[in-house]
Amino acid sequence: MVILAAGQGKRMRSRLPKVLHPLAGRPLIAHVVATARALKPRRICVVYGHGGEQVPRAIEAPDLVFVRQRPQRGTGHALQQALPHLDGSGLTLVLYGDVPLVAPETLAAMTGSGRDRLTILTAELDDPAGYGRIVRNRRGAVSAIVEEKDARPAQRRIREVNTGIMALPTARLKRWLARLTDRNAQREYYLTDVVPLALGERVDVHAVTAGANWEALGVNSRAQLAELERLYQWRYATRLLEQGVTLADPKRLDVRGDLRCGAEVSIDVNCVFEGDVRLASNVQIGANCVLKNAEVGAGTRIEPFTLIEDARIGAHGRVGPYARIRPGTRLAEEVHIGNFVEVKAAEIGARSKANHLAYIGDATVGRDVNVGAGTITCNYDGANKHRTVIEDGVHIGSDVQLVAPVTVAKGATVGAGTTVWKDTPRGGLVINAKTQEHRPGWKRPRKKGRDS
Ligand code: UD1
Ligand code: CA
View 1 (tube, rainbow, N blue to C red):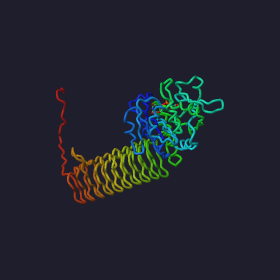
View 2: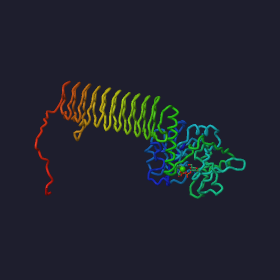
View 3: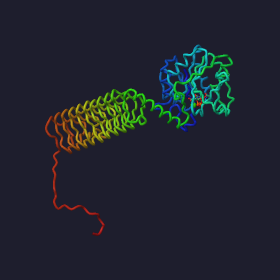
View 4: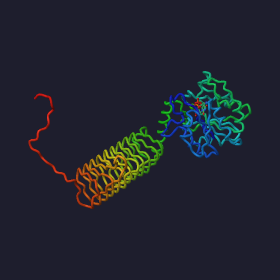
């Protein structure tokens, strides 16, 4: 199997090689590699070129063989570079790094149809602009593929297009590639020119139509990439709906990775899910949330405008609105994290609450703890991070600073405005001795230099 990915993608107007532009959060070519792997081929060979080592670096894996094409002189020339790695006895399946949505089942249907024939994956598009056209003879058999730039007006009206994906008998392919020429509008060695060569050897040329039109779509411009992104997201949302997930608007959901949902999950508009996200049953996600590599336990509500990354949220909790849960956070069951609360690398025990305006970082918080508004764990001394431990049943008043490393022992109450800078004993009240004065008759200062 060969994936062609050496082209520049001029129409993208980007320095990033086209196949590395992201679709649903992953490079285009990563989608193609995943599809290729699903077919369990003997070898996956990636032809790269434009952008140097960026492509291999982005997708490096032990099962991929990388071959450099330099200069890039067309799809036929690209495939030629891979020849030394192909076993002469079998079929070679050619995939394009910029055609990311083709389904493994479609490819399986192509390779299953015989060893000594040339199979082309085609599609009927309403707008075939930019694609090579499938030319058929009077008997309806494929006779050629004509690139748009080389096509006559009548040929341009053909709506059946070449997806670029082909299965070819490898031994013949070696001969055919050697005979390609660059006598065409783009001065390139077109892989598509193998069709007449195959017919010349009386090899059956067979067109398989893609199961769905979107499988055929290639990315040549940013507009096409954006279109494919919407299509991908629409299909993903449709699958979630079929699984029983409630989506307030399937058109306003973005999944850039893998989202797995239990029963009766509901997701409001404009949420983004990145990496691996698992939502247990009865989870509700409010509008405008971003969850990345996160797990949310059963029955928990994530309120609007909440960001969660690399964290595990327990069952029956409530997080947000406007909460930020950063990497390394573990919330046990029934935890409440409220608005403008930031939590980082902290474990918080069952039924504990931090409902307003707080920072809990590098902390271990026990069960049944209440953290008051404006409380801050001062975890950073300018050079190192230190941990704060808040044991079970502690009540922390508003506007408390916990200067780490520090432990507030079980059952203690910390008064509002206290700076806790050394460990406290169990129970009792912790306050800083402060007094409040009142100065009657005190005058506010006045602005200087102004007559009054
Ligand atoms: C190609 C096909 C066209 C088909 C279309 C489908 C040819 C001649 N044309 O046209 O019939 O309808 O794809 O999307 O095959 N590449 C290389 N090395 C090169 C040139 C290209 O590796 O020297 C790779 C590109 O990275 C890309 C793929 O081959 O992944 C297709 O190249 P592109 O230039 O986009 O071809 P199209 O003009 O789209
Ligand atoms: Ca293309």
